[in-house]
Image 1 (cartoon, rainbow, N blue to C red):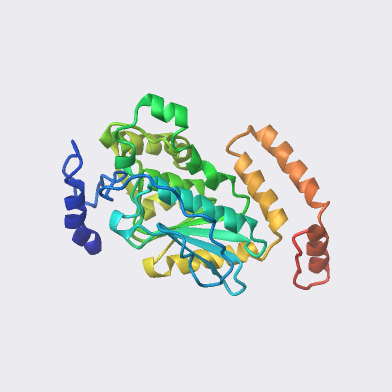
Image 2: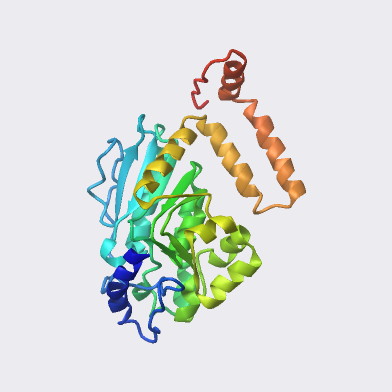
Length: 320
């Protein structure tokens, strides 16, 4: 908490330029995230071509707003780090486009079985880049399907773990909720404070948050702009585990390695089945689960897994 208080003056200075933005309260109770802290920045063409991600520990030099690497003993975990530290990782259009490129590369990489998405120690992502949207009209948003490209994360078949340190506010919270698992650092904070700047969540905040924590808490967070701590998020079901700040990403990579050691095709089926629980009735969901369960019997990995169990040896999955 002392570190957060120490950060408050610099954040207050950044917040001071936003029209109509009230003075921030104590960081123990509320933050005014989900606003642009990046200063002037215009949309610009994205780097091309997509950077290859075939080196175990080197990041992609073509990216401006993210850092990518392959982690784990077998280099089977894709790591994406949001990297706009001066802007507390505000989610500008360029960052989202680069994130989508990295996700696509890891999705197509047969060596990668799971992905970890993280930010910095101070912020996972403090929100969307408001200066990119403050002058948009309804017609602009509607005709361009504004923010629709944020959903690319939800299309990834490989499991994605969000490792959240610091602020996950507004679009940052929405981005974390698009992931399959959320691990949080001890000082993480989650919130949907869009109401404080005269709008509402636009990338799934009202829908995913309600499904994760229930109507009452979601309504309180959306209507007041208040944020919750990592401990409160875990108690509410938004977060699965909490770790010290300095070991969070390491623990997320360990979980991703464990997932990546299983059959990739069966893992994708399991992810699809769990996600269907949010979209279907119980009866429909169970029917889908049965179909996917039966489908595993058409794979070589199902045969190998059961044979290994009977023979008391480790399974050697071929992703077939």
